[in-house]
Length: 358
Image (cartoon, rainbow, N blue to C red):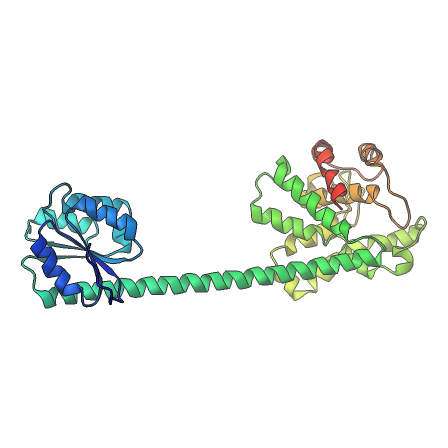
């Protein structure tokens, strides 16, 4: 191997079994490039594996011992080298079938022997510069793409933060811990990721639904404190006002331009509006029944009822998890899709672990 310590433009690999031919080519390229040499195709492939990122061009003879130029070219093509590094054939073999095969394998140019130095330097140098410029452009494009992705991730984080802050503020207003919305998110995400309830949904769908779930009670911001924080049972009139948090939640989300443009809006609107519907049609606000209620609204309803039962509220103490499960089975706190309820009950021992972490 021979090198030029003063090069700045990359490394040229010269592959030829004839020492004089290598010396002629080395003399052409050494002033501008580092030059490394191989005597056959096998040596060339070994060098390419070792110096792939440094090599800016391969100058390849055809007729060589051990492994000829065409065989080496075939292997370079399989490895994708010819797409990344320009390969030039310098040969006295000018048969049409050889040239056709070489070009088919990705050779950039074929130069006939004996070589004319200034012609070789111009033809090969121009292509090297073209590949280098393309590589620099690709690197810049990737850098810009990464910057855009980072900016998008930052915007998403800000959006999520604002959504969580709004939802948590409402929970604090009603005298509840902000952990309520986090648990609703975690239970929703768990059921969609780990059970048949999530079948047919993409990872993005699951992420959007889980985020939307924390806005289920956003409409409570419109409910008067006297009703929202009443320690006793609500009167029929008060309950009618409380029920409006569903429609108020949908209207609030519609009035936030940034929210309407967010991927979660469709899910958030539907969940806020319909998480108090019942499978038997006796829920509110629209009296939907059966599969008229969306999957995500039904899942959030299950999570919300379970969390409400097992957590202390201004109007009640927390129920034991086993008691809460029995109440859900008995229909004392809503009527659910029997299939969805069975899945929830099956997974409840693992869901119960969420409460040991908070």
